[in-house]
Amino acid sequence: MEEEKVSQLNQESTIQDEVVVDIKGLKKAFGSKEVLKNINLTLKKGENLIVLGRSGQGKSVTIQCIVGLLTPDEGTVKVFGEDVPQLNNQQLKELRTRIGFLFQSGALYDSMTVKENLEFALTRVLKIKDQSELDQRVQEMLEGIGLPEAVDKMPSDLSGGMRKRVGLARTLIVKPEIMLYDEPTTGLDPITSREISELILEMQKKYKTSSIIITHDMECARITADRVVVMKDGEYIAEGTFEELQHSEDEFVKSFFLDTI
Ligand SMILES: Nc1ncnc2c1ncn2[C@@H]1O[C@H](COP(=O)(O)OP(=O)(O)OP(=O)(O)O)[C@@H](O)[C@H]1O
Image (tube, rainbow, N blue to C red; front, side, top):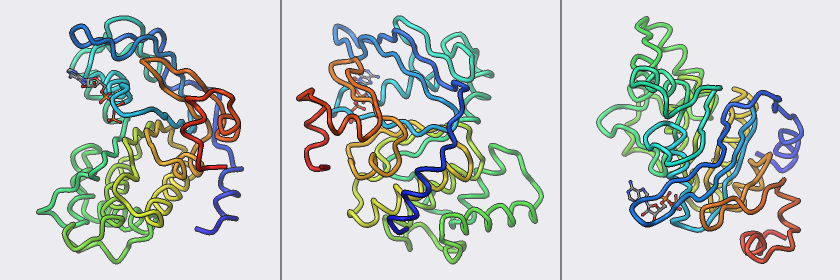
């Protein structure tokens, strides 16, 4: 995508006032190790929120609390207004059908074609059985990510960037309301990373998804962020737009933005 299109997409705000994730005073320790000390975070509908932080700071632990895989020691975690730690297994299952993950690996099934990978998500999550509807949705999604010709390919026939695109397609095809991206561009070359970041932005605008994006890739942050938070020692120490934080006086915040000015 050209610079102009990215900046045009950035200006088309999809953000609404409705809060979809609301975390207050979240604490989580493992033994004597306090990982999350006081996390306060809101994600608005239609927003792309970037979380920056050094390795091992507890970014993934935060995400696991959001989807109910970990229980907080203190604080509240509300998703779509529901108190996640209070949900039973069935309610958690339903909640998770509304949330998509994109892991670092893209996590495709290697023994299935691209089409089968996408169909699997549709039949399992949305319980769609009608073959013509499956065909249509798969084709539409692959066109959306610019890979219609990959439909019958095996994941092993695809490049790293293509696999990542298909992984994103497989997650988005069930139309999750919230997307959680854990380092979506890690391991990709700079050009492919940029393509994936632009795709994340395009998908946000197209599907009006609300997203939390954990990344160390500042180009990805620049392209996709509506808002950025910086995590240090189990707390968020700064919050703002990419441009605001780029000019922060705080040495720790500055360290992330060194090569971006
Ligand atoms: N289930 C667990 N049991 C014990 N310790 C854990 C568990 N999950 C995470 N931790 C610890 O919590 C800390 C934060 O881990 P987390 O994976 O959230 O970091 P991160 O900020 O996502 O880092 P990275 O960028 O490297 O993925 C680490 O020290 C990790 O060892």
